[in-house]
Length: 278
Image (tube, one colour):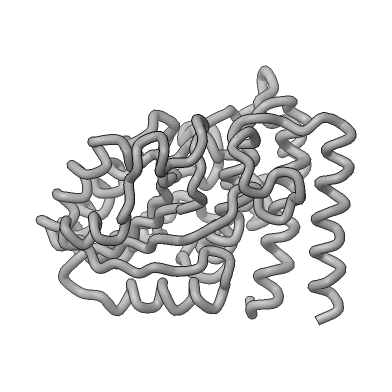
């Protein structure tokens, strides 16, 4: 996909995120929307994955460490073809396989169950070590929240990743600046994020997480980096492209009502119309 096609795909994924959370009357839209461009780039440009063969041993792996933003991952997997887009309407409903957090046993395309913050990166490090031991070519990607990196386990995993020189591992931090309790800088500041990862001997790239050309350059640089893992610190906007959700911590884990849903979809329709005119 070229940049314009990726933007259009990301907009469709955002529509599906909002629709799924609205239908469930619960979920986490803010961080799903902030990471939508990252999800889109990973699954439609970067990773070696095949929805027709989701358990391919040679596939790249993705671990959603901030598992509460499952609506974003599910929407991406559905649009990629892992399961019907219509199934997103059953998010968080009793008897549906699309649970509130990723479940590797029941959801096609999910490589690791996650949701307990701080633990996903450890699983990703384990996968990357396994790849090295097996002499495999697959790469491992994990997406963390910037509030999540307040967890100590994140840094234990980072220490091991650098110690084992896991250049097949890419850690992405969705730096939207907000967590459930508000501004991350006021709750328990993780800044400077880049310097912390550098101190743990990561190759670090700072990037605009909504710029597909910048994302392409960052992931290419990560592939070219040898002898150490890469951390991509992506600056993003929580609630991206939904007017009343942008930069509002209250939309971390709230579902829009019917009126708000109509406004959100109108916002996203305008984004889509603008992209079609390019």
